[in-house]
Length: 143
Image (cartoon, rainbow, N blue to C red):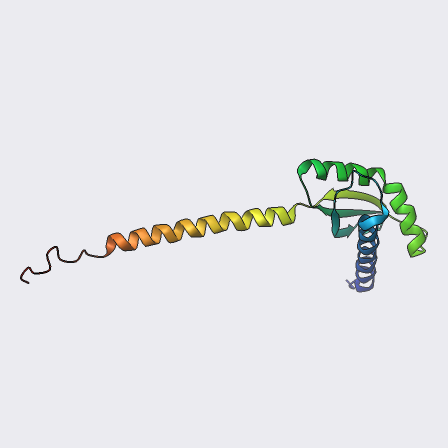
């Protein structure tokens, strides 16, 4: 079966353009006060090109994430029309925004792994100090 390299390349280019354009909108064009400081971390375009999932990483609390997601979902129509105008295409896929928590999860995993390593080092040091034989009790005792 032949590879669809051209189709995959086109889909990747479109996803990259969506990421750049929506990122620019997030930086200052969308004036909704509910949108917290955020950036587009990934864009996944469906194979048929009918829908796109936009992953947005939000710098803030879970409440700010929820309000940002609600504001972006409310602004979907505006974002689609802007993308249509900027890209000069007839069809812009249906957009779905998703909060990307991968950075926060990565940080949490690093923290937990650091704790495990620290505990292992502490246990290894304790085991090493227990396994070494004590020196003779009195320094002047005969051998």
